[in-house]
Image (cartoon, rainbow, N blue to C red; front, side, top):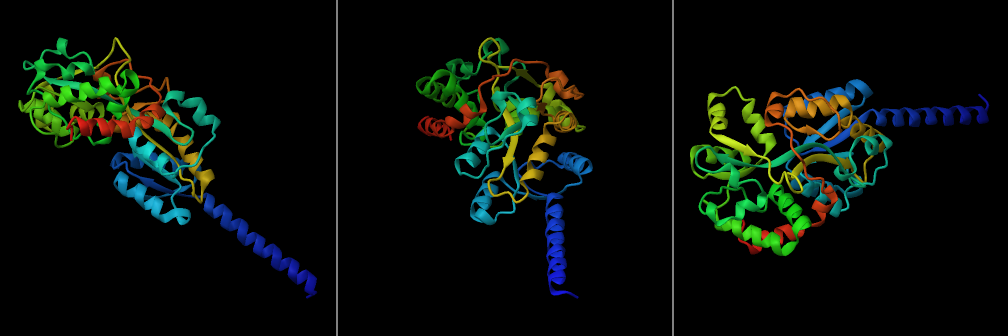
Length: 341
């Protein structure tokens, strides 16, 4: 065979191998997820069904995943990070782990206050006040500020002030009212504790129902999960408590988000953006609501979840999620000074 022809055929063959490799890469997405919900399997299978892209998933706790991605550096296989709460997504941004994303789909479907340049919210949970029926007056619990009123002395249960859910709430209070009033509020809440902070949101709900305290704050996700439970004890718990949407005549109820972004060193960036766009699709948005008790971020999505319907409509705070990130560190400082630990 002519030497030049042989070289040409060899070059073409190598190009073919490279192209095949590139095509193979596009069919894989490496997802690092701190969402520990078995029900999310439907999200992943739906994406693969639509795109043919296989999801390889690594799950872990939020801080562990962030540290892992940072340690992996430029060699990280991670394409997308999914987690809950704006404070955690902000931490990923501050660590320089996320890549800016421009997508007409994401920018067109997700409201501006629920996205930043490098991460996007895909579902919402609201942070509401819960109270024990007969042990607290709901008319005296219309706003977050009411939690600091001395009349509630010895009546409030809470999870740790260092938890991202509470840090995000505090960040919103700082953004709306300033640091001085935010610290005054934190000290007032601490003065009203029935016991030192402990446990998660579900523990606060059960404590209120059991009479350990009269008032607490919880994300709606946990309430909806108990409302849909088949267990008799869970139904009894919900029968004993009432739910209040705070600040309905003011800035609105504080919301937490679940979201994600494309990693800076993602080896499959095109697949990563496709995945984020899928999470904003009607199918995925309905699933966040109906399958996992979270509200969609895309307006106009029809929800078929009896628990969310029972909780009813509410005015949500439209403070940009980027503002929550901005005040996250200050929120922790204020909680520490107030001994809200």
